[in-house]
Image (cartoon, rainbow, N blue to C red; front, side):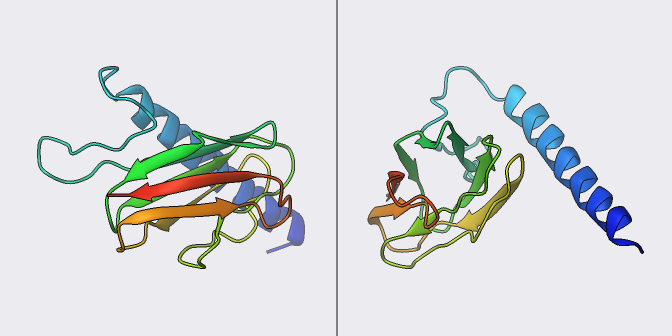
Length: 128
């Protein structure tokens, strides 16, 4: 596989993942706040979501359950990370237009994080 083909395949997979995420989020009920994860009727926790846009994390505080999946969507044209101050999670670099997923810590509490590339970007993951 050539380098151009490999890059095209990665971009295609990223675009497909973003499209599926968009479709799944569109099916969510508007009665739930996007900033707070809630239990689904089956008892399984829904996924948390952090959006990076205009060099800011949105929401500034996301509340999730211990061990819950958190998806990070980078809407900026440059790479960012979601790196916990306590090292409990780190997405590594997420290129512009791409996404990544990590597992929330199993320890309840407040877990501040930054973008290790742009250290003025701060937010908090609240695990309860």
